[in-house]
Image (cartoon, rainbow, N blue to C red; front, side, top):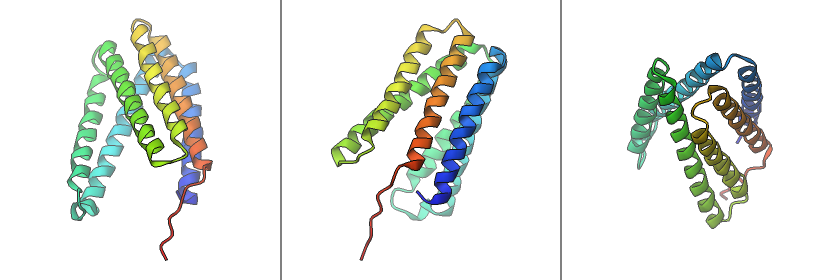
Length: 178
């Protein structure tokens, strides 16, 4: 990661922490809507950037169609999440629960692969996956209270921000070809 990427990750982490404190201070209904909109915009942005990467570069690469498929799926999830803001809260809660559980599982599987490959950052990835799974389980037990769900979402957002800031200051391995 270059210097600009590190600075961007630090600022993104600080913004996420400030946003989570603002959501904790706001009305639970408004915070819930803000969380849904943020999640949908993040998915939309990720999907559009993956599609742009595919059309700019990945279509000429081996396995580039994977970028196209991932971009389309993530873009669809972003539109779907944006549509869920008008429906009852239980659907959005279950969607967030599934997202955290899936993300936690993927993080744990990636960390196990990193451990097998001898990477040093596998412990941080395991902890991030475990926190996502714990948040999903806690959300499952607190489906009735929107305030508690907003608190859990904000705590997960804060943890993600802290991990992002830590990874920005972590040294990355560079492979030199002579």
